[in-house]
Length: 187
Length: 296
Figure (cartoon, rainbow over the protein chains, first blue to last red):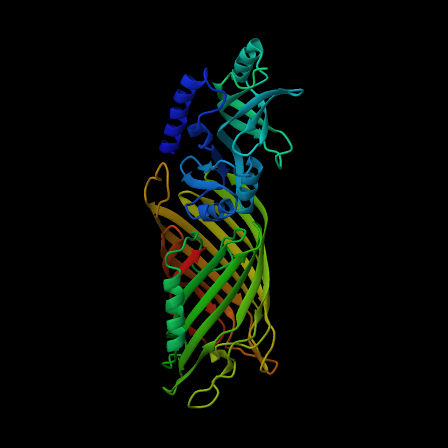
């Protein structure tokens, strides 16, 4: 967990310095994959976790599952290029006999304007989210001002609605959004 | 018998590193399931029936070694199978011992969770189960004096049917389970055990660790108190009811569970609490239970 955060932070600093010169995101950030913190109801003993672990291990690219029984949550890292979506995680928890009630996501990807508003496309697996929140508005206002159609950024947020597959748009409430590469995507 | 002990020791050793879930010791109905998860439980039950109501010095000992295997088909459905190895010995009023040993009847049942309610750190589940016995056990064992009575045989040879309801309420520091089941007996070898209504109440309380770690796995120790009861009808031999069979018994069962990451080891003693057996039956002094279970 700490290592990944360090890599992400390092990536942010590096990217901040390089953003003005490069259109590509720093490899440290691109390699980080995504973090998901799941709040799981029904997790009432350490042994309950095994069924969840077994289901999650079947999903491509899921690694480093850690649980906090005190907080009823499990944290996992999804490796880059994994096809695993938030919906897949929800299904895995359901198959284990428990209920995933919320997903807190940390990811790197592109934010782009579409007809329905601003969407986030994960660089991990292409999963798409409709974005909500004031912090996104502030960032996207800036994008509008500079004329960028899309930017590469890192965000943290809570998935409000998970949709099956990558074709549909899930809904993400963004708590923190940082533009890594504002020049990328400028028309 | 040696082979059976060896077999069970191997099973025990093979799954000592597993991960399991804390549920009642003296019952299988509340055992948890999860999709594509296997569960194995190996028990050793030593039943000491030493209270002869006839005061004729009769005594009966029964060693039962049931091996249970279960598989979660879905999050709500599981298939359970149990095969026991049984050794029974009885000292008659004339001082002679009769004994028999071999495989008991197998049991196969399906458990379905029809409702569950999850909350942070807590889950409540309602389930039903239905199944039957598989008469592959030994029901014609003999000793030096010939064929012992049917009640001393390791297996009945009959195809019984049974079903029941289970409720579990589990949180991070305690668990409560209750299950009720009814077993409909059938006849084999001109003998039929009486139908049985059973209930189990179980309360488990974590006492180690006192506080749950903020993150990561942990091992816990639970105190367990159970109440196991049953009421049975008369046995029938050649269609005639046996006046010295059936009745009610309730056991109070303190126990302890050591729950590792994927394994749980437990011990319990069933102490007769209320006994109202029909006729001149030998009553249990105590039943000692050792158990280990694991999931993988």
